[in-house]
Image (cartoon, rainbow, N blue to C red; front, side, top):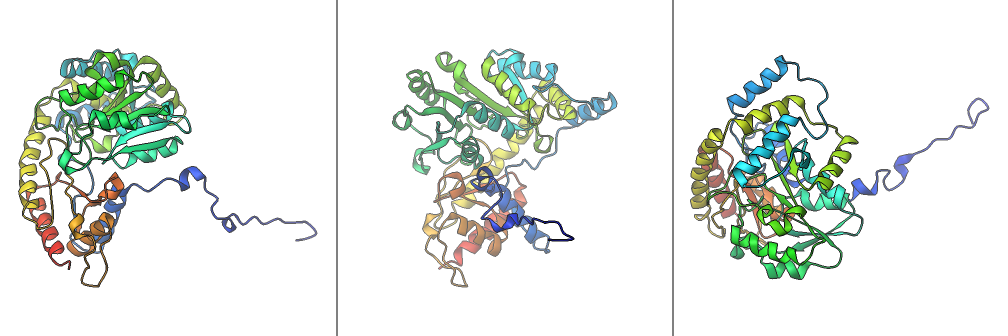
Length: 413
């Protein structure tokens, strides 16, 4: 009692946690965590080579930047329509038809703040508590956590390097239950770089034809970083077209990671639901980025081809250097800009201080502290026997990074 009045002091920290179960059950992004740890070391004056983040090291093409400057001069600085400017949605429709042979209407396109938000929007608009989402492993780190946010249940189909990290129709069908609501995957794949062929996708589509209540979330953000032929989308198969939700964006192909511009193409009901959800969360994405995106799609793929040529060269460089490291097993990815080598032969070994390497996270942390190279443990992608490294870096940086990795691994005993 103070001055004759009762005063109640609430110590919210006395409970286990005052945060929601939703956030407490959510894991930190492993890729962003390793990037942060690398930056902390770099801030101490240590030369760290980061191969942990999926970001092209090229600059955004000049024509795209010029479009953004023009948009500023023309005062495109007000709220944009929630699903995106009509001109951008039409540019996306044109792209899907011209490049992929897929026919959509602008009302089936919803533009969001990056492909990550597009993925999250789709999951939150489709998944109820207890619904099952089938995800092949390895998968991009945020897939399963988005399912956690929606209170769904992830059902994993394991793959390995010997299968080129791709599932079979038999594996898919074995994972389906009456609770299955969604299947989600990426091709080209993050973290493996694996690419499903048209025949492989057709075989999976045949399975989905038998289960009309299952939707397919196809993450195609690495579409243009494809080294085997043209990109193939599972949305091309007419019997399941209405249940496929394509997620794509501008970050990888046009080196526009910081612009935060992604989109979905889906049936009208799902598109409207995403529009509704986005209207209550972020509303329309950045007006300037959208105007730049229109030019990116309308002006063609010349800059994309130049980046792709560099990635082809770097892929071969890293492949050769990885194969020169005893104990490392790798394949040659057909897309994206990642390697996902198997490193389980180092589990159980010790560093100079006697610390045991128990799993892929331990190995990634060891490579960061000993070799000053940032990678990401495969356990965060659903396959513990691997690590992911990005080759979206210069030839010189990649050569030095692989030299450091080889030297650090040789010190384990």
